[in-house]
Length: 636
Image (cartoon, rainbow, N blue to C red; front, top):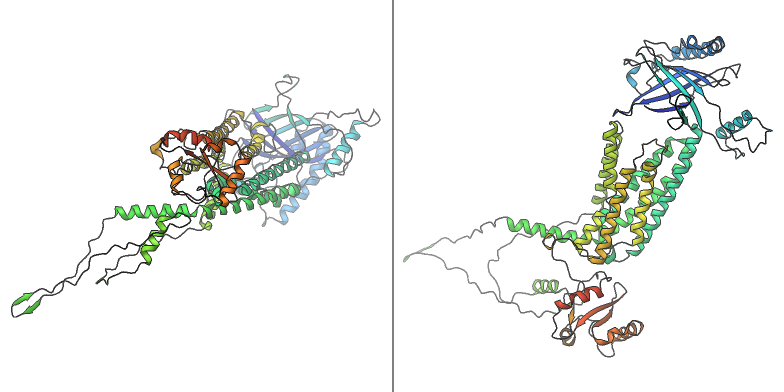
């Protein structure tokens, strides 16, 4: 049997004279069976507390059981009966007067055992009634600092004052509260008892152990501040990755879905902490700090995601054009209707008018000048479009113009992420009312999907045939920092949400992230398409082909690879050659300074007449650490 008791005094708590005899108290009790799949039964009980004796007596109140009105008759002695009767006569009278004055405004029962059920006031649901006896154990206060001059009662009073009104006073370690209880149901006919000494050994149970509400709230503040520090660490890593991906080449390698999944998690965290800071005044400073950190992370993530989207827009445009071309090819061509002229009636008979003069198409042999960016197809298309027809043509048939695909803006992508985030948010709220197995399965499944944020990056590396896209400190740092909050709830007992620990599920999450990281490592070392069948992907662009000396001597290489005496490229090549190793002197490697990636590119060159494909392995090993160049040169 699993017990969760949250003891607290309601807003109606007051002390009555004599103050050391009795006072009103209320508690929320949750009873749950470990063998069942539900959340248990939660009820609200009201009663009397005798501080000197450490005794509490509480009952439920409903239509069939007037527990609070007859509570004095359930006390164990005449002294308890007199003090509780005097207290309840005053408190019940005030409550009844307040109900009479606001009967049309608030008809609810102030002593209901199910305050969360709105319909309990008008249509009460039958349930078991309870009478609860509680004995608070003496606190184990550390008297070493007082040297026996201060009594334990005074130390407890100082601890209580410091918890309610903190001012930094030196107090000993705050002890945990411990109490034993017996719960009896008069109508259902069963009894529940806490488990602990002397009937059971301390290893089997210590009755009911917990902390005061002030300590619990202070613990929440500390953990929220630690969460804010973790989020600031994520911000620093994201800032470093954004600085690294400062060129279109490096930005285009990053998967927008990988950053988007992290961004949605940060946005949900921002919404939750903002709601917490506005509703829980005790947690306002810590929750506001965490919300601010989440907001900064979301702002940087949106900026980085927008940059990735803009750089990858040409790829999506080409994909849309290919899809439209495929659709146009699959659609059968409509027959072109040819208009015929009416026959001319003459004395010799009917004669058909001759067709208009047509001239054969003359090929426009326009000279092609290769532009500096080696975009030959674009140059040919431009020359054909600008070339005027040499001979006049007749009856030019109008053709349907192909509508260019409209580029989708970043707003559409942003709205998509917002809708997904709202869907997850509402499903998560609904899941709070599910049974324990379904709620646990949903939490584990959602966590597993969230920690799959490296899968889109792995897929993009395969599609672009790119070895490395992200910094290793970003990959490892984000993985560790985003696992830390889950480690707290999955591994730490008595966490702030009272969640059940599950180290097996956490090991599965860690193993899944570990597998993704190793796949990224294998892609950088063995190649992005290592282990992927060749027929599953399109042919990737070879950014590092092996050149032959024939191409070098023919002068057909792009500017920068042709070493002309006295050229600045040659001087830069010689400078890099002096700084580097001497292996470039044998003619197997040519160096060129890339004006885009700001690096010295070492291009392997094989001897004339040798098999270029045979030297591919050596060239791949030589340039394995070199990533793709943003401008693809056809001759390379």
